[in-house]
Length: 354
Image (cartoon, rainbow, N blue to C red):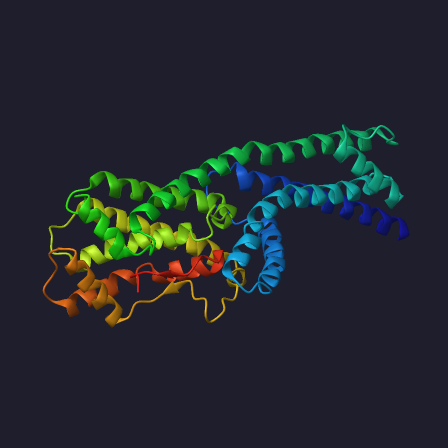
């Protein structure tokens, strides 16, 4: 009976170690190689644990600038922590396997695993099987590190393309970063009635946001170089601009504008659902005086309506109907924008510039 329990424990240790190793490899492959949005449990736990610490530290900061400076470290630190977690799990898995293969000392198992992981394999193994597994651990360690290093350029290229649109949008939307300001720029540049190229660029940006921010979710938390910028607020401005033009400006329907608005709604909602599906707890508590998105009321909309009229735009005659249409259009994306703004701690944004 004693021998049966002894062999059973060794078998369970071997199986458990193999599961940990396979889980680590699959987490790396699903994170950086698999071309689709996958929610990886190991990664989620790692990100959420680090985020909890950053949330506690951010709560001690009294100004947004200080919180932004702190949270800028969250995404890079989390990304660098991933291979450490993967390697730690794999190392523990190999310790279990070494013990299952006859290495009775846990201290020696730890030394064998650590030596194999950080070098080219253990030379002082007592059996051929332990030696073989130690060399496989050495190769696995190099593989996991290489995966992260090889995909860092991909992550930063996607970040650079995203921020290029955010920076250009700030130039067009003015210091207030509002939809009326952006519409004013489109009107002055002669692009309001026919600007296929601009709306197509924003449509492509939204499509890329959906693909990159779900397949590489940590990218959502990389903050803009300037504290006042955010890809979430940029998306909100573009969508509010499209909704405001559709509901208030009296002009023929622009299919490129409509397609951009549809792409934006789909993109933002899918990114939001990806994170919301993982855990509602990932969204940090936002202080009452720091609501990232300011919901416009009827009076605020009417003020923006008059602002557009002062720019010389031909507006629809029924303001109340325009308000109802704008409110209906905005309902397609506002909840997703709210969630992502809180999740990423985006800067304060007043969508109609009030």
